[in-house]
Amino acid sequence: MATKLTGTIRKSDLEGGLWILEADDGFHYQLQGSVGALHDGAKASITGKVERSMMGIGMSGPILSVTKVEIL
Image (tube, rainbow, N blue to C red; front, top):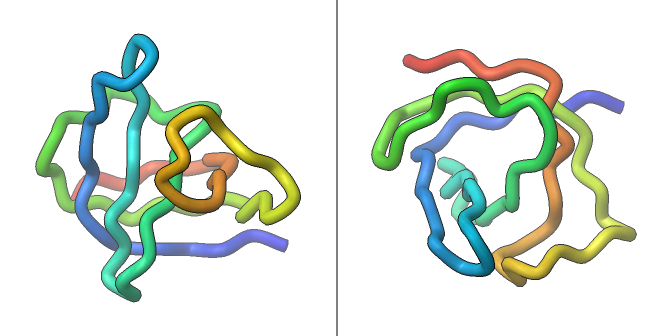
């Protein structure tokens, strides 16, 4: 089931770098997949599937498998 979340994009340098969405709902999601050309601090709407059974090395919250990115 696809979920659409809006928030602020953050870049983490942990383990070579990963992208995090600080969602407007107060949760953090580790982004995985087609993230496109993101930049730290961008406001974005991300569509994807929250993978609650997966864990990532970033330990920043659930993994969000991205299918679409819209920079706002």
